[in-house]
Structures are given as C-alpha cells and as structure tokens.
Length: 236
Length: 294
Ligand SMILES: Nc1ncnc2c1ncn2[C@@H]1O[C@H](COP(=O)(O)OP(=O)(O)OP(=O)(O)O)[C@@H](O)[C@H]1O
Ligand SMILES: [Mg+2]
Image (tube, rainbow over all chains, first blue to last red; front, top):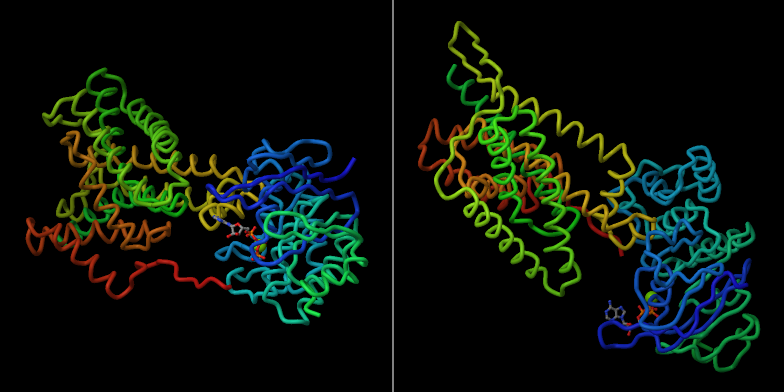
C-alpha cells in the first residue's frame, strides 16, 4: 500500500480547470519531487491533498483511507503536515507560539516538549529567537519556522511547497540539507520545487507537471540526465 | 467633585461601550467583517431580561442568564444562516449588506413582538449607592457593578485568548484561515465560537445599559452599537485592548461633552474626536501596523 495515492485528480477554480486528471503515488520513506513551471498546478495539488481545496473528481488516499471528503482540519492528526507556499507563519505570534500551534492536534504535553526540543536541535536559530514575533524574522528564518511548525505535528508525510523560494544560495543549501535530514529521520517527503536541479538531487523519484498534467515521471537521477528536462527546467 | 462624578459616569458608560466594542472587534478580527447587527443583539438581550423579569416575574439572575444564553445562540445562528454562506463571496460588500439586513430584521421582529412603545426596564441590580465625601459624591450601584463586570470580563477574555487552546486558535484564524486549518484548527467552529462570545458580551452589555438607562425600545441597540463601533475603530479595530480603551475613552468623552460643552452636541463631539484620531493614526490608537514579509 502506498503512503499517498492520488488518482485521476481534477481541480477547478470556478470554470477554469487547473488540474486535468493527475495520478501519482508516494511510498513510505521516499522523497518525491513535483516539478513544473509557474502556474503548472503544483500548489493546487498540494492544497487538494491537505484539504484546503476540494477536487471535482478523483481520489486522494492516505495510508489506505480516502481523504477527499475528510474535513481539512482532521487530516493533520492522521499524520500529514503541509509547509505552505510563502511560509504563512503567524506573523503576530511569537516563534514559540507558532511552533506550539503546529502541535495543536496533539495532547500529550510531555511528547510535545520533546518535539519542541527536537525542532530546536534541528533549528538552533529558532531557539535563540523563540520570543521574537514571527513577522519580524528574515525570510530564511521564517522558512525554518514553517518547517519546524509542520514537524511539531509529528507527521508521517510532510508536503513542502517551494521551501527554497526567495532564499539566498547559502540558505537554499541549508534548507535542502534539512529536508534530507527530515527524510533520513523517517518522514516521507513530497517536495514541490522550482529549483529542479536541487530537488532532483535529493529526491528518489519525480513527476513533471505541465499545465495541469503530468508529462513525465521517473527516477530522479534519470530525469536529471534527461535532455528535455535539462533544457526546460535546468536551464542548460 | 462634579468632575469626579462625571469621570466615574463616563467610565461606567464607557465600560458598556467597551463590552459591545469587544464583540465588534473580535468578529472583525476573525471573520474580517463588520457585524452591523451586533448592536441589535444588545436589544434582544435587554428584551429577554425584560420578559423574564418584568413580564414573568422571575428573579433577575435568571433574566440575565436567559439573555446570555439566548444571545449566544442567536449570534451563532446569525453567523451560520446569514454570514457563513457568504464567506467565499467575491465582494466583501455582500456580507456587509446582509449584516444591515439582519439588523433591520431583528429590530422589526422585536417591533412585532413588543410593539413600538418604550418599555420601562427594571434594573436587575439591587445594590445600594455609594456615598463618599459626606454625600458630595454619589456612585450608584449600577455604575459600580458595570465597571466591575467590564473589568472582570476583559481579564477573563485576555486569559482565555492567551492561555487556552481555543483562544490561540482564534488568534491563528484571525491571521490566516488556511494556515490555521493546516495546523488542524477547525476554522468554522472557531468563527462560530467568536460570534458566540461576542453575542454573550452584547447580552451583558444590554442588561447593564438598560439597568442604567431604563427605556427599552426595538431601537435601543442601534445608537450604542454605532458608538461601540466607533470605539472599536478608535482603539484600533481587531485589537482587544484597543476596544477596551476605545470604549472607556468614548464614554468619558461623551459624558464630559454633555456636562461641559453641550448635551445636544455630545454625539457630534464623539464623532469629531474619532475623525481627528483617524487623521493622525489611521489604524486607531492600538491598531496593528505590521508589514508582511514577501
Ligand atoms: N485562487 C485561484 N483562483 C483562480 N485561479 C487560480 C487560483 N489559484 C491558482 N489559480 C490558477 O491555477 C493554475 C495553477 O496554479 P498553482 O498555484 O497551482 O501553480 P503552481 O504550479 O503552484 O505555480 P507557482 O510555481 O507559480 O507557485 C494557475 O493557472 C493559476 O492562475
Ligand atoms: Mg505554487
């Protein structure tokens, strides 16, 4: 059984069809990259998986359960977390409050403080700045906060939407290092990226999305050497 | 001494405005809408207490309780039936106009049931007055209770928001509904809770207001509602301490205006002060002014 299975997904915004029948699967322990140009529909797919949008047709199966009809707020406690595009940290709340918000669905105080410690170990900057208002963090720090906040729910599967967007090269490397570590620690990752080269270098498999359709899929290292991909997405 | 007398009256009236303004500001913060029917919930609260106490002759505490329960349910019902279906409407005007419609609906239902003649509301408070300085300063029981109730409510509300999970969820939803849902927060339930709390506060405000100013008509809520809206904007709409401070200041300005300038001009002065504050600080006294990072 796949951890996540998306089948024949179709999503509309009003009358405009953004996703035109997309199928893919994510196995436990994998890092899967979803790449594609601006407006291809990557964010729409992630939003549909985590329940922010409802599809017109198709199914999303998470660990054997169809979650298309599940209310969005109940999906987190099933073990799925989503680091949204543009970070969307709670700007008026402190770093610590943001992280605690990530553990909103969890009850055990002891376990929550263990997770908090684990997040601080992974992101020492967040510990130093735990009292600071999230809105005043730098872009890179906000990205770390958004990731830390998602990890606070102790997810089995984490969806990440363009975590490297707008970051300087050093921060980009740092973020990708962290994604690899998150993956090694046993969390399955579905990664949406414009930075196809970086994404393919850490992914196991990848899907290429073009205007609402998957046009190519395969092992990441194969795609990295695919001529069409190199032209279209790696700028070579 | 009369200065002190006016100041205390102002704080008391301001406390009522503050309670109403809290509802305005919380609902605005969370649902990003101005609930113009909020003032009429005050009237419903007062009529409930009137019916339970004056018509049915039951004890005042029961009357207040009935008002709070009924208004809480009414607030949630209005949200569910009138506003929630419009939450995804393309224009924010849709829900604003609906709110004005709900306001008229409540007034006219009250008119149908109770008629247009003013009812005389019997104070629910049987607390004696306080005489100080050899009787030169007289503070009525209503004044004291109003101020105390307002203080207790604001403290409890701040604790609720900052210390409970439901309160934190309200903060998260008011910032970003989508991100809040991604945390596992039930956004619809959180919005409903906000309407419930705001309406319960409006019920309390209605009872306190009519205990101090005992004429009750179907339009009793509309002027205090508008003033409380002004108070919320004055303090910075969306800000809870802002609503509190805005309400108290407005009450003081109104009473001082009546006492020292002109009782006809008092409302004009209130609105003029609002305009001046907004000219210098468009977000209100405690309005948030944070810039979003891209
Ligand atoms: N709220 C919306 N209303 C209408 N159309 C939308 C909305 N959100 C996205 N779209 C459209 O759906 C299509 C897919 O958008 P989506 O945000 O999923 O793309 P993306 O692949 O994430 O792009 P990017 O890399 O720029 O983030 C685009 O054509 C976009 O204009
Ligand atoms: Mg996107």
